[in-house]
Image (tube, rainbow, N blue to C red; front, side):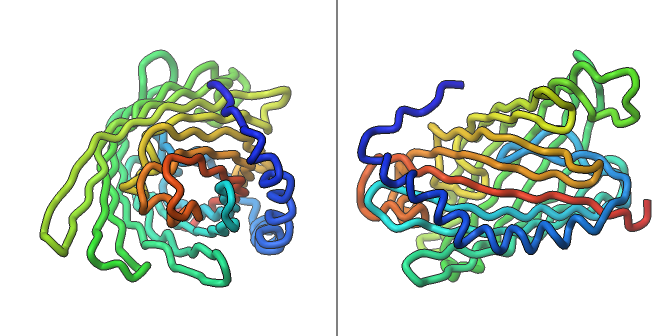
Length: 292
C-alpha cells in the first residue's frame, strides 16, 4: 500500500496532532486500559479495524471494542471521536454486535453517534488455502438527531488464515491473515421517502512482525460502512499488540478524502471540497467468558 503524500500545508497540523491526542484522548484511553487489564480470561482474537473478517468470538464470550481518535483537516480545528461496541456469540457461528455509543467533539460542541445493531453468521470456517466465509447485516439508529437518514449495510467476508504454527492452540494464531469484504451501503431518506444503495468493498491483511504478539495491519476500503457518504479512496494502517489472549491494543493512522458535504462537516473539513482528512486512533478490545 502506498503512503499518502503530505503537502507542506499539513505539516503544522501533524506537529500539533500528537498534543491533541495526549491531552484529549490520552486520559480517557488510560482509564479504559487500566480497567481492561484486570480481565485475564482465555479467549480468541477479534476483528481488525474498519473492515471485517470471517470469524466470530468463541461461544459464550462477551466482546467489547472501545476506540478514540483525533481527526484533522487542513485549516480546521481537530475533531475528537470516541465509540464503544459490545457483542456476544450465542453459538460458535452466530454473533450479535450492538452499541456504537459514542460522540464527536469539536469547537466546544459534542454530538452523539448513531447506535449499531449487527448480526453476523459464519457460513464456512477454514484454515489454509480454502477461505472462510461469513455474512453480516447492520442497521444504524440515528441518535445524532437527524432522523431523516436511516443507514444500513450488508456484507460478505472472505478470509484466508495462513501459516498457523504447529505449537499454537489458537486456530486464529496465523502468520498471515487476508480478508476481502463485499456488500452494499444503504440509506433510506424519510424526507422525500427515497432509498439509495451503493456497492461496498474492502481489502486488508494482518501479519506478524518481529514477535507473534505485535502485528502490522493495513487495509483499503470504499469508505467506512458506518458512513454512507464515505467512499474510495480510504486507507488505514497501524499496529496491534496482543497483550494477552483476550486483550488487544491498536494504534492506527487513517486517511480518507472528504468528497461530500456530510463527510466534510463530520470530519471538520467545513466547506473546503476534495481535501484529505487524517485520523490517529487508539483502540482497546477485550473478551470475557460468560457461559463458555
